[in-house]
Image (cartoon, rainbow, N blue to C red):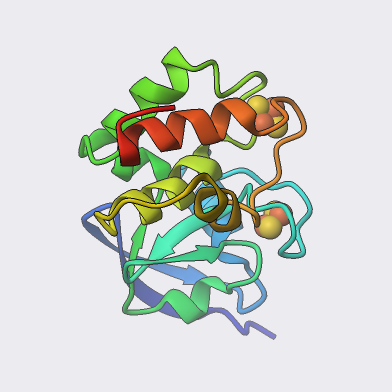
Length: 157
Ligand code: FES
Ligand code: FES
C-alpha cells in the first residue's frame, strides 16, 4: 500500500513540492531528493550534529525530524546559508584558524555557530563551547573551532 504523502516546503528560498514516504528523515530528503549533500549523516540518532539544518529559523537535527514534519516549513541548509553570504565571516575564520580537517563536521558546526553569531552579542569561550557542544568533531580537538567563532563574535581568538 502506498503511504506516501505530498509535502510542500521552502528549501533555501525555493518552494518545492514532493511526494515522500512518511518514514523519510529530513536529512535524507535533503540529500537524496534535493541533492543537497552538505548536510551530513553521522550517528543517525541525534548525537553528533553532522546533520544540523535550520527549520523556521531554529537549528534542528535533520536525522531526528521527518520530511513530512517539515511540510509548510522554511528549511535552510549549509548550501543556502553559504550562498547567501550569511556565514562568510565564520567560513573565513574557520579557514584562517584551521578549524577543519576532514570537514565532515563543518557544515553542521557552521550552522550551529552561525546561530550564536546571529544573536549579535558578546559571549565567553565557555558559552561558545556550550553552544557547539552538540556538534562533534573527531579531528580538531575543538580549540581552533572555538578560536574561529571567538574571532567572529568577539573580534579575537
Ligand atoms: S546524524 Fe544527526 S545528530 Fe548525528
Ligand atoms: S574536521 Fe573532521 S570531524 Fe571535524
